[in-house]
Length: 385
Image (cartoon, rainbow, N blue to C red; front, side, top):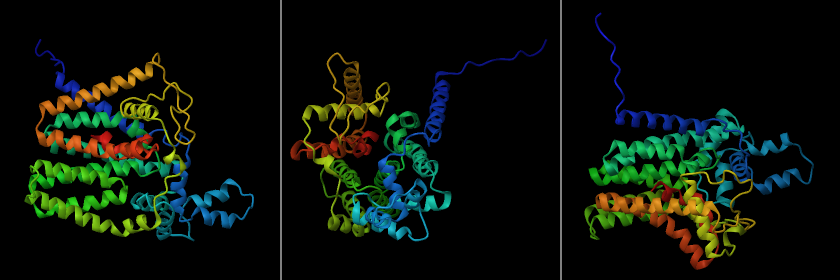
């Protein structure tokens, strides 16, 4: 009776591919489903205020003590005929120059095209976040020359609670993630190809990254240290090319940098609150754990609050503190394993990305006092590493 159907059991490699595809689909679902269900919190409300072109002072002046309803207030939360994108830029420049304008300009036109609902406002960072997935794969190809490593990185980024959270927030942090990845790819590619066009592309990414978020300057300091170390502390052609590309990128950012210097940076009173070192360390562990697991689950109140200064007290019999320490040990061992088993150009790039970005806010708090390092979003390039 002829032919029999043959069933081939999938190999371990095929199972790995299926698992990664499932995780990739989950990452897309996590970013796009129920995007309007979370509370539209104060930082997102400020995004809506900025894209409207109005300032807080102008709203107070126009309301003039009148009682207004929700519809009246929403007028100042969306683009309108009385203001344009130049007002968005001016409002940022005067009151929040620490927030570079690129995302807010994009959000202004996005809201004009598609509306200003919570879903629309959050869909822009969510879609930007999806672009980070191929970028981290590309970065891993440049670094490790291994597609499998790239797929693992995509899987981690897909389901990371930290990255999913900021993918669904109407702020610039998913854009900063994207431009940081892109500038890192551009640097590695420029060093590999050593062509004029590749260094021009890197210069453009320097400017784009700075216009995405001001702390991108730390990323390029890390890049500079990396290039200088790879070139064995010599002012070689590669170092000169890096310096020129970075210089041109920074020159393009000077118009906004002048406004930052002129108007100053205002983080709020919370940033300078004196915080015990032990409390800071606990917060760093919580933030690091959030990259891999949402430890907020099961708690009705925030684990810590930088404004009130109230933190959940962890005792030695509290399982969460041991979970945080376990995550730290795993991350530390992973870095150790990478340094022992990869080329210098690989581990040095990752270490500089982690260390330079992390050291600045941590050193600032330990030396000058304050709690800036409690904010996980300042460590986005570090967490990518």
